[in-house]
Structures are given as C-alpha cells and as structure tokens.
Image (cartoon, rainbow, N blue to C red; front, top):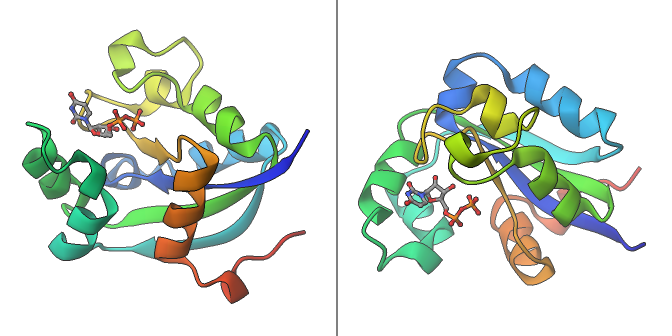
Length: 141
Ligand code: UDP
C-alpha cells in the first residue's frame, strides 16, 4: 500500500476542550506518524481560502467564523493509506452519525463543531499540506 501524507486539523472546539493529546494518540496508535505540526490561529482570509471549495454552501460563513474562533492544531500525518485511515479514525461529519469509538463520536458536539478536519483525497491532501507547511518543514521518519 502507498505511503501517503494527509492534513489533519484539530479544530477550535477540541483545542478548547484540551484534548489535542488524546486525539494525536489515536493517530499514533493507528500507525500514523506526525511529519509536521503547529498551533495556529487562522485569519478570516486564511480560513476562507482553506475552505474555498465550500464558499457557495449555506454553512460557509458559520464554518469560517467557527474556524477562526480560536487556535487550531494542524498536522501532517504520514503512513500507509494515511488519507483513508485518518478519515476512518475521524468518523462521519455529523457526530450523531459517527461510528462508536471514532474521534467525532467521542469529542465532537455538532456537525459544525466537529473536532477534526482531514483531507479527503490525494489531490486535496497535497494542496492542504502545502497551504500550511513548506515542503522543507515536513519530515518523513
Ligand atoms: N459543515 C457544516 N455543516 C454542514 C456540513 C458541513 O458546518 O451541513 C462543516 C463541518 O465542519 C465539516 C466542514 O463543513 O467538517 C466540511 O464539510 P465536509 O462535507 O467536507 O465534511 P468533512 O470532510 O469535514 O467530514
């Protein structure tokens, strides 16, 4: 299976709950390695650019408001099948529909405050990783 990189964001709700470590430990337990990481408070312009694909959706403004409501913990996860593996660990977008034991089932409150973001495909992963980290600051181990 291919070694992939994916972008993970621990969103402001989970950062505020002080569960960064609990979430990161799930990635590590699943065999994903942290190849880059930082805490960052996004500007409105940055959040709008990151979520530009959703700009016509009715929830766009609320999503941007939420994503800039506090700092987020951004990581590059690396490993076999990392993109799908991270999505499995996250669970469904709506925590009410997320499978038991997933990050969203355990830490998310609602479809908008849903604890984590994860890239959904190789193309988006490449764009999202580059959005936050220059290639020289991503470390394969
Ligand atoms: N979102 C929302 N309301 C919705 C659908 C999505 O607030 O009805 C937010 C939610 O935070 C979600 C993000 O928009 O994580 C991106 O939506 P997407 O469908 O890409 O879900 P994801 O890939 O994050 O599971």
